Image 1 (cartoon, rainbow, N blue to C red):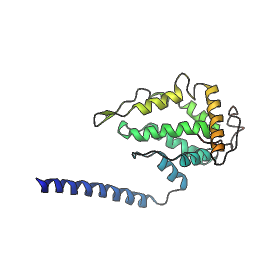
Image 2: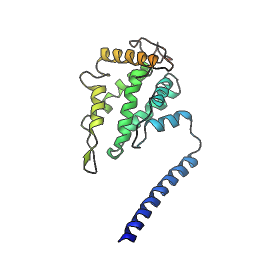
Image 3: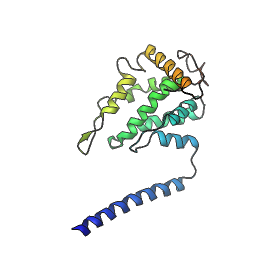
Image 4: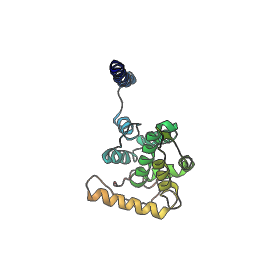
Amino acid sequence: MNWERGLNDFLDKAGKATKILKKEAAKQLKGPTSDLEDLLEEAINNENWGCSATVLNKLADRTSDYHSFPLIMREVWQGLSERPEKWRRIFKALVLLEHLCKLGSMRCVDDAKDGVYKIKFLKDFSYKEQGREKGSGIKDKVKVLTGEDGLLTNPEKLSQAREQAAEHRKKFGGPSEKINSNQNHSSNMGGNVGSS
């Protein structure tokens, strides 16, 4: 029996090592990635850990760049449309979207409002992993964004959240250019705000 347990442990470890090697080989075949792609991968992956505020802030800053904005938002929307088994990726996409609404260019807010139905679709999200419900965090983030008093449904709350985030970022360090959160994206094409 002990040899069977040892064999199973070995096979399990070998399987994990193979998976890691395949991932690395796929990255190498794909070729070099840009720093933006690396940041997005770190922010919205399916791993069992969160993303640093530094990465989220860098992404928020990049939303004012004409070329980076569509890539960032495309990744957010792709993250939100993942299969339920990738619930961590869905949650992280919502975390990033909330961060972008508070700290990114106003174009992020406009884009989120245009796709609010995609966010609301997740309000009843449910997925069980090993008998435990994993959807509560997703439902909470959906409520923060689209609930009755959500960032995307209450302009006053959004304005307050953007101002608080800018103050927080200024207070705790990091580049910040305070903007009027009521500006539309055409007059705020290059503006960015602080971090929460």
